[in-house]
Image (tube, rainbow, N blue to C red; front, side, top):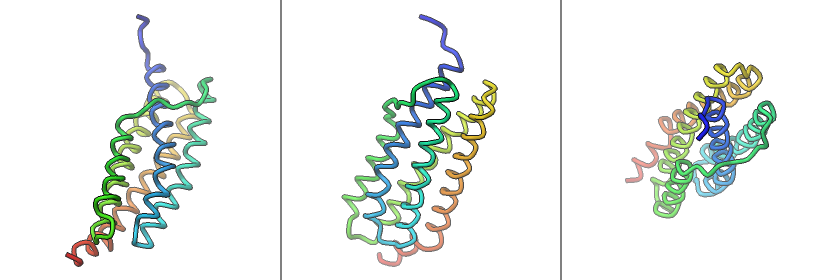
Length: 165
């Protein structure tokens, strides 16, 4: 077997996050429809738009490394999204639904932040300056979304779930 390189690892991880972003883009409208808090609905819809832009950036990174944009099944994101769907089913119509959806969304964000941080670091090592810029832009968006979700949880959603108990 040929030695695997950092370039190979970068490419495989890029395929992983590309798959993940496409799955996330499909899941966000369902989460928005399920949410009852208007600000949470809006946060999901805004992140859907950002995710579509992030997919475009990933396609640019694929082009920079001379590879076709394609995904590779990511069991981690499949599991996180499945958990979100379970929350939609199990907590539908309850005061805790929004808190559960928000927590599921943050699990997605934390996965994305981890992947983009790693990819950015590897792109720096590989001298892929244009890829670094694209990955940093997405990492900044993901971090801001996570902060927004935390503020929403702490200012409204969690207390609404608790008060209704």
